[in-house]
Amino acid sequence: MNKWFVYIVQCSDGTLYTGITTDVEKRIAKHNSGKGAKYTRTRLPVVCLYTQEFENKSLASKEEWRIKQLKKSEKENIINEQEQQENYMLEEDWRKRMNNMYTYDDDSFCDGFTKY
Image (cartoon, rainbow, N blue to C red; front, side, top):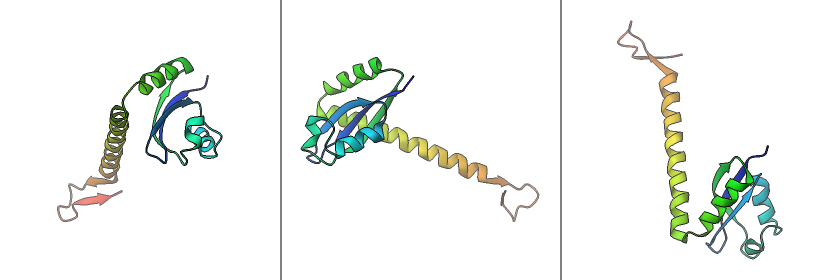
């Protein structure tokens, strides 16, 4: 069973367009080729700002409809929240990698940290 995604793109005029797809990269490419939604055809290029994964088309469609009812500022809040979450996850990943890269060498105070 294919996963479905809700996505939000920003058009060249600054407006936001929300849609659903099973392949975000392919869909954005279709928009940018001028063969996507009628709304985006005259507002190229578009840039994907947000994606959310769903287990089926029905759930994705419901979320797409919900997002389309929001004001632009509310959509921007959704986008910003996802960006903040992604940044937090990247920082956590970096911290874990740094912690795993070095171990404290108890035998030699001068050596401090020993890379392994």
